[in-house]
Amino acid sequence: MSGTPPIMGGCQCGAVRYSLASLPTGAHVCHCRMCQRAVGGPFAALTSVPTADLAWVRGTPGWFGSSNLARRPFCRDCGTPLGFHYVDSGRINVTIGSLDDPELAPIAIHYGVESRLSWIRICDDLPQVETSDDPDSPTRLAELVSHQAGEGA
View 1 (cartoon, rainbow, N blue to C red):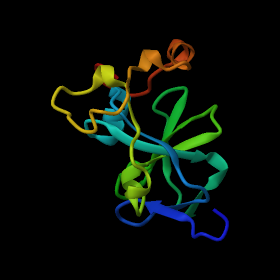
View 2: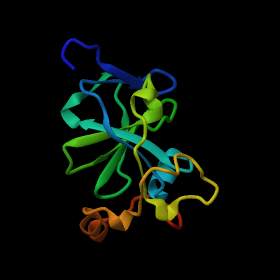
View 3: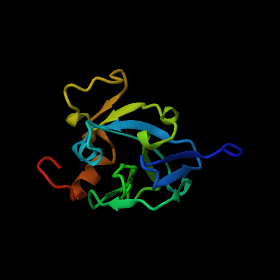
View 4: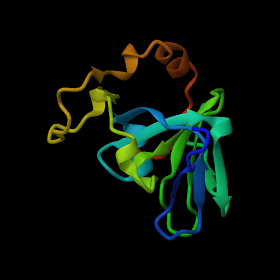
């Protein structure tokens, strides 16, 4: 992306802003219960960059450890969910809706479809992957300790 402006994003109140030094990849929607709860919606729309390519340029996000394996940045002022990060990963996901130009991240796949709500009908022609089908899933699920409250977390 040399010579091109960074990709910008942030929360709805403007207290937290970020820039991405590379084009995001792996855009997807995740229907798992943890993502549903984290964004307060029927799914989370996410895309990722190498962790080193994300810079917080205004404010500092709060971080919620949704499990022992992952944490989620958010704006402490307005509550906007800003992303998802496996603590052992060199990549970080940002919420597509927090990008200034969400058209830069068209989704390519559905994850966690075992928790997909029956009335969700978007991009149904895209690949559908259950959490247990992800190659990293058995190891991660065996180690997972959820820090989210409520049944089905």
